Length: 231
Image (cartoon, rainbow, N blue to C red; front, top):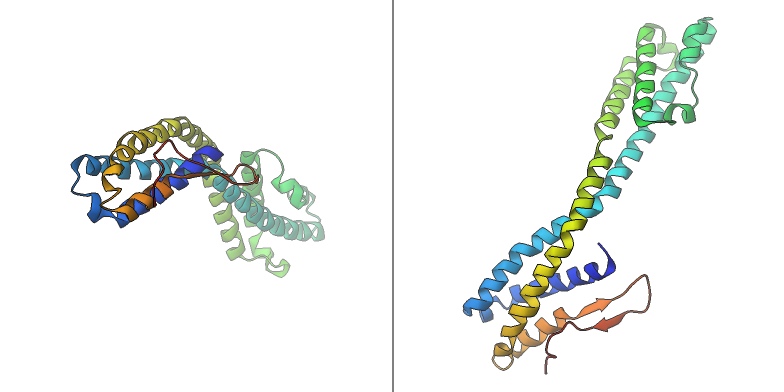
């Protein structure tokens, strides 16, 4: 969502709050009521599209945390198994689990998961001898759980990217629909409340004002193409 869309959404939410506050004032005006119903149905769709659009970073962060947890667990076990293997001159086993933490988490995602599963298999093969080296079955169970959790997350960033792109394509049309509902329908009926419900009239147009604040620059107010309220 770009800055302009973000500003519009803030205005939409402000308008929605005003409409709810003064519902008893406008609900008898059928044309106004119909437009509000349509706007109320459209607003959750817009906010949901915004959520989908922004979910990509969340999925990536979650996967990164899972990778870190998996790497630490696999390295602890691999290092202990290697210590056991070296002491017992099992050179094949020592070479099999000879990884640094960086080695374990390096490369493609599926390769990382496969590497950790091989460490798990190697440790399971000598688990009866590992208690003196700080490795017990419960730690292997936790490693398996972390591998499973990491693998389950692998498709999510790609899925999120696709969903985010789709949401980005749809959002402009939904914003346009909302602009028509407000600018061409609700705004046109608001003069009827100017004298009978001045508080509603003024608060509505105050909410319709969009604050433009791009990239940390000084904020400036730019009014939507609506009649200026009078106090």
